[in-house]
Image (cartoon, rainbow, N blue to C red; front, side, top):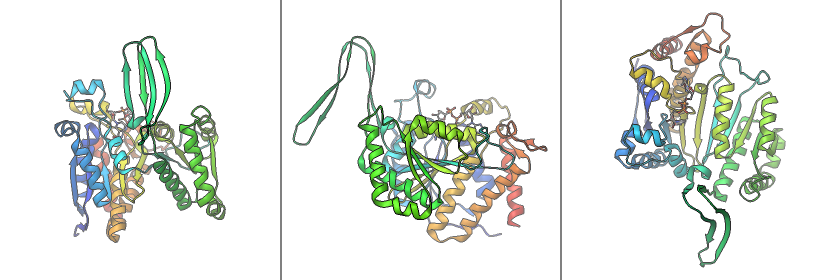
Length: 403
Ligand code: NAD
């Protein structure tokens, strides 16, 4: 069979550790035999980021703005231990944080639901999609290690040179200090992408912050959402018979656990980071959570929500067999290929993406799965396979679907 031809390259962002291994195998086993894969390749592996002083990350985000669709492998966000392990010049910032700061937008995370993998929360019947604001807050913070007594102040100087000054804290001893920011324009585009996505899916939208404690910062998020909703979306929501609902984050958490699912939960950047792992794990496995960053000017970056699966990578390095779940990484590729196909009018590519997802789900539903799923699956005839074998099994299912 002739390979599917692409018109525009995908921006390909390679990554680290176990997911880097999976990345290569997915391309070799599931993509290249079927597609004449065109990509603009950026190696975001930690070594290369260090070699380029992180310029490669910035370049990959700019390429995404140029081409419109990117697919990203999980990457290490260095901490002190990684600086030592990789002998880094600097503790580089989170690549995802850097990319999101350039692209702006909202990250939508949805669990992949397969039959035979029942959520840990018995009431959950439908997926819960997390919409995570992808700009600012703790991910673009400025931090300071206070090592002596002194006064910390919050100072804002406007363009005319007028100064507003507030004391944050008077340190008598050592401590820590942090400054963060956000922008009305970014919060507005976050709100609009959430409202649009809810209308698209005809699902209720929940939004939560800690506005009772953060009376300026979080309250501004709440006010902007409400204002945009009242002015631009109220009627459309009523027509679609869906609801916009704001509540405190603690109340939201309690309600989510008691709910049936089937709605979108919009969260600030950090809340979305944490809550999406909770939702993913409770729906089955971290490895079953897809993630797409949608920027306000219509760029898309697809990735798995999980990290580089370090523990498995060290096993792999020792020559031991691993059973790492590649579902979310496969769905990152299928999501990006489908979007590329839609934008370029390539039906064949869209169809391939759909078949790849179908084959992946069918493989699991036939009982063939990686260890993380085998531990929780209720299927009677389940068989645990290795990282590589899982991909080979999906290929066989894919070939039978494609005929
Ligand atoms: P992780 O997601 O790699 O692993 C967390 C836990 O979930 C581990 O127990 C792991 O075994 C399990 N798990 C995750 N994905 C799995 C999969 N596909 N198959 C089977 N089990 C899976 O997160 P971590 O251990 O906190 O972080 C490891 C590295 O990943 C860190 O260096 C971190 O900076 C990075 N990270 C990257 C991203 C990203 O690029 N999007 C996100 C999170 C963490």
